[in-house]
Image 1 (spheres, rainbow, N blue to C red):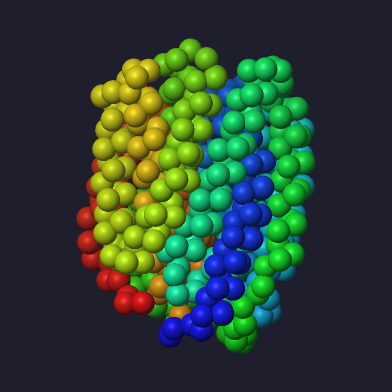
Image 2: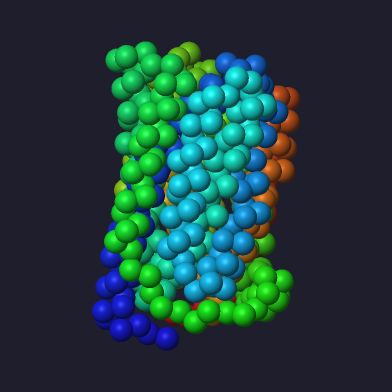
Amino acid sequence: MKMKRGADANSSRNAWFLGGSSFLNDAGGDMIAPILPFYIIALGGGGIALGLLSGLREGLSSIFKIFGGWLSDRVGKRRLFVFFGYFLSFIFKFFIGLANSWQHLVWFVSLERFGKFRDAPRDAIISQSNHRGKNYGIVQMLDTGGAVVGTSIVLFLFWKFHFSFKTIIFIAAGISFLSLFPLIFVKEPRFKKTRRSLIKGVQILDKRLKYFVFVVSVFTLANFGLYMFLLLMAEQITGNIIYPLLLYVLFNITFAAFAVPLGKLSDKIGRKKILYAGYILFLAVALGFVFLKSFFYLFILFPLYGLVYAATSSNQRALASDFAGDMKGTAMGFFHMATGLITIPGGIIAGFLWNINPDVMFYYLSAVGLVALVLLVFVKEKKI
């Protein structure tokens, strides 16, 4: 059903304000994310610990994402859940700075991600739009723009002032607090509340959505938060922490720059075509880290990996929302929960293989990515 122009304009403004909150939260979050691999090593962790951190960082929080989406359908309010989610993330960032062992770090990072139950209500707000690809792209662009700013701040603080990990984390928490303010200006679109239970709501979801969630889950088994291992590999190749942080900035700049154009393109030519390109590029990048291990090639592979994210991240959510139906919060919560939970085994398996040999890990990721690409062929797009 087409929306009125005024309503669609509101949805675009909502995308910018929701993206603004995401920008500020990620500016703080991505002051922390690129130093986590080095922080956990400094606290005595190894490959398994890093894989556990990569998986649990998204996996545990994903259990709550479906509840956030379903409750927003049930209560008839979405912005409230988005606000509370950002508030929780702000609080637990301080606890990350208090960690004194890698086990504590893993749990505090996982608890901080519980705030991600905001994702399904936020995506449900965005889904009430004619131009979902573009609007998801706007949020993704601002989200990743925050990551660029956050990582650039970390790079400067390390290079100029030699700040400790803990000091940087406390500064990051303060910046994340600002993410609460743009939410004041979000105009919540009207929608009909549901009386359905969570189980019933999941049962009646579109079968095409369930199959697509399965496909994305397989892809996520390979692309589970891989950047932590890539940063560690870059540090091993370059011999210092500054170049990996610079590469992470480059990754996020590429991600941010192409998120909106590829989102708009998916609105025009279809989401599957963009996802095909993203999945194929992932295979090339994974194999690239096997055969192209030099300082020069890192500056090619990291931006290409950013392009993978630009093609897949927001467009996977947009395609899922195309199948969402009336229970948009529940549908997007189901999507986030399933694809998030798979990061736990994904990270643990990758960490185990990394300890054996990084090349073995990348061959494995390539094989899983190829399976996901084949499964994507059978996804049936819905005309919008």
